[in-house]
Length: 187
Image (tube, rainbow, N blue to C red; front, side):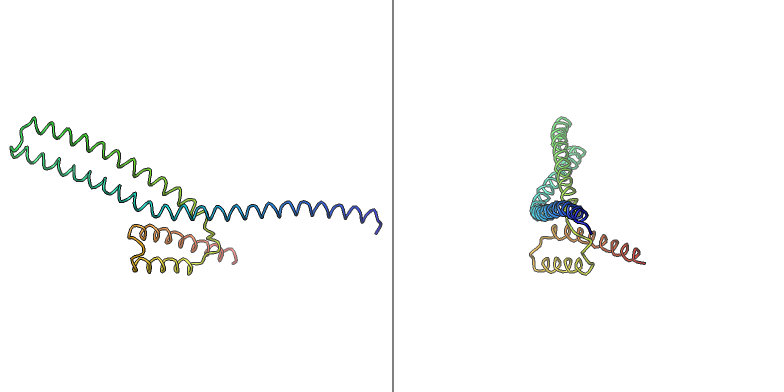
């Protein structure tokens, strides 16, 4: 082979190596970004699981207040029908309670909507961050078993248990579907 041909191939190899090195660095950056993303999602999800329980307690308190006002309205109506209060007192008290009920119901719906929106957004990121292509149903079953054991020890509140178990059951179905797809593509 002539020296000129050899120089051409050496230059070609240098170009290939430059492109290769560039992509190796880009893949490393992507891997680091992916790792950082997964870690950030995990931290946000862990914090959200704890905060969500507290928020749902507050929302449930609001719901209980709404139910209580509805009962008060029912009792007020009964008191009017029994003649224990006059029409004027009934109208005034009923209007006040109805106004309060409307305001609390709007607050409840707004709070519930916000919690649901955040929950949905976090779950989307959590599902994206999980590498379900490498998970097995046995691993997910192990996570469910560990969750149930922690609940039995009193380490996991009922609300958190219900939410996480539901999430894990969904992941298990996704893993099962992926396993089925992999099996069919091999056949």
